[in-house]
Length: 125
Image 1: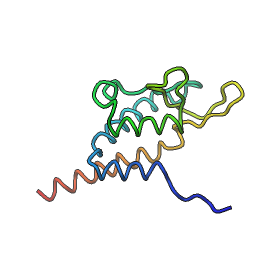
Image 2: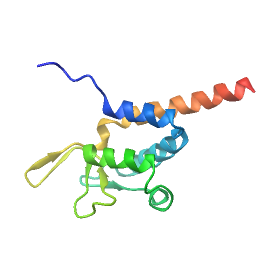
Image 3: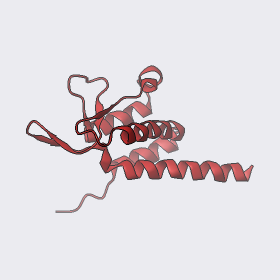
Image 4: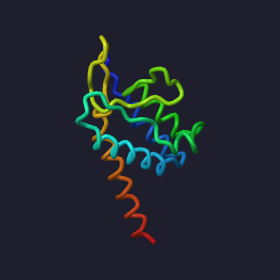
């Protein structure tokens, strides 16, 4: 079997940046990281959609990124409009769910890259 090397998450980040969503991606990632750090020791804690996405971006790219992350690292339960991200891998009922902890290193890397890019852009002015 051929190994799938296509990384959907990184692809979505690249497309988002190309279309000018870099600042909003960073904003969402900072929210996720803050919530993750506050709840990472809770056994069944989840991260709900940021209020600003509900109020400002329900039909925008950032909402698509959130929904993709929920499909991969969370659940919609009975909330098909919002969903939540699992903080850590755990078992519920008979199913095993992946948690957002799998991509926290990538989220931290993205924030660091954004900060470095802003610093470089500030140096160029």
